[in-house]
Image 1: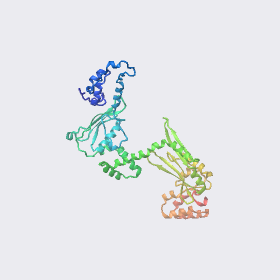
Image 2: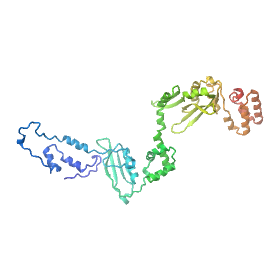
Image 3: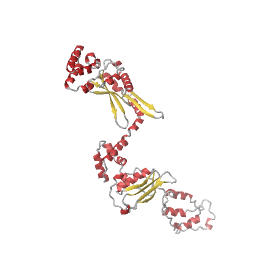
Image 4: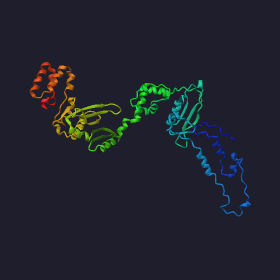
Length: 444
């Protein structure tokens, strides 16, 4: 029997055929007689003899039927020889490349080879890896070990599958389990998903110790840091992806908290893309609770947002009957400026029904911030000491300031201010430059 020569042209042949399939290809024939003669497996078979005299008197149903054509058998032979498909759900340490196996992309095959190398302890390197083909060889010194291991793969010509078309699995190098270069942060992140879910505050030194015990390799601290960041992004998703779902978030808040105030604004760019602008949130239960059981005091402040998406957080808090912090409303804006504060305070004014700020104390630590919402809320208490102590930080100035601020009548206010002028004229000029009706109790 003639044996086909090995073909190494990977662009013209998908995979080398085994002897059984080549034998079927040669023996397949439409003529029953020729097919029987050329098939070696049928040489020992005997064909039963039929006496023509026995056929006389038989009906058509009793007569032997002609043998069906081989077209159906040919299709069965073709279906029996199918290339295996890679199963990505197999555990990583059980993955192994197989000749003729099909993959979705070169990236999937590369991941399979990484798992095979790390679990078996045979270091490999990718001699060529792009969107067209992949070539992996042993990472050892060829002159010293002469390891014949090689994997060559490329796209199939008939199907959109990436297939291993040549593979030599034999290794001549001893296992050493030094494949830290193959452990990129993405690969490590996938291995630590369960650990990060159970223990989100896993330290980098603990990750290094686990990797050394589990994979017998040492990795750097920086690689563990990048792997942890990618694992958290795989678990929680990227922050930019969360902003895409801001409309769903707003609708869910309105569904679960009827009567709440949720205001979401976006910006339509010239290229028809949509960018997040600002959002305001105030739950119905919170604002009703402030009206019924909290003091007529609110505090305003802003804070920077750090991370992938920048911006500022504007907040409003109050004091409940137990003198504890009571969150009221908050907003996320692009920056802290007058239009954003004006928008935030107008919504807050309507939600809390402040009636122009009557009998209300508003606390803030910056004078220019107070001036921004002065036209929204009329009666304002300004916490001046935050700025006063930046210039006059001594204890004596502190005590004199609070004595003046707690003056209950106008006469005490003037008397205490005179004392400050005698001790520290600069502090007196600093306080008189401010509107005393906004920070002294005598004028509330």
